[in-house]
Amino acid sequence: MDSRKNIKRVLTIATLLLAAVVLYFGNEHLTRFQARILNLSAIFVILGASMNLVIGFTGMFSLGHAGFMCIGAYTAAILTMSPESKEMIYFMEPIIPALANIHWPIIPAILAAGAVAAFFGILIGFPALRLRDDYLAIATLGFAEILRIIVTNTISITNGALGLKNIPSVKELWVYWGCAIITILVLRALINSSWGYAFKAIRDNEIAAEAMGISIFKHKLMSFGIGAFFAGVAGALMAFLITSIDPTMFRFLFTFQILLIVVVGGMGSLTGSVIAGVVVTVAMEWLRFVETDMNILGMEIPGIPGMRMVIFSILLVLVVLFYRQGLMGTREFNWDWLLDKLGAGKKDKGGKLGERA
Image (cartoon, rainbow, N blue to C red; front, side):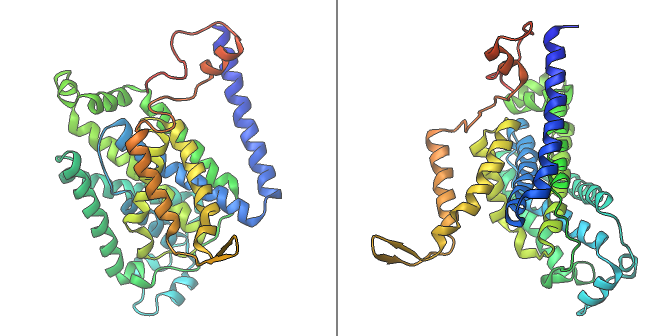
């Protein structure tokens, strides 16, 4: 067996073990605020990677992620809340009997949240994916708003505008980052499979891909459904992190934040989504000081609510105007790049940083 393959296998196993050790010690020693930021980063990594699959790897300009996230959050919350909590919270209108006594563990609820979001993704994808470009963006944005309105008005299921509270709290880093690592590994395997090559062929030239015998609609629907699945998983994790949800959380602003991660990281790069997911999430928390009163050179400057989003909007415009490829473009980190730098092992064919994904 090639010596470099052995080295890469050892490096992968060592990295996963190191990640497990870091998560264990982080869980024990980080403050609640630091752990919360890291968990939020993992959620945005999942969202950025899943949206990148749809936009960056398949070339579909979809803006429906917030809607699928909303479905995942409500599904996980309803499945894991205790019957006593449901009886107390649904005081305007009782929850339907079929859901009243359901009380699932966390992990099955996360998977169910992804499955329900994927079902709605496929359902919406049938009419929406016959559109292209701007029309697809408008249609998916409209569907996301329709989903949010449905959630608001199905009071006997979602408790309407009052939202849900007393959702079980999950603080462990390994749950959030475990889901994020699994998401990246699954998507990486997907984009390096024949399905992934079909996605990229559709992105690069849809007519040529169809001429090569690729079923355009089937592959688009598959990409859309998988993206919705992971958005639902991220929604479930968000519900467990903040323990209360309501429909106003999942407006277009949420999709804008995810789109920012995809654009800044690079459309067509999972590595870029991971880096941008962490950086943007940490920056969002760090920039809270711009929304509070400040004293600069003796001048009292009042805080302006929403200033953080103005800064991120300016960042998005600058990236689109002057650095469209983002941090990573379509490149991915891989061990070959590191081993080339170190001059270690026998070189495989291809596999450098800079390779087009």
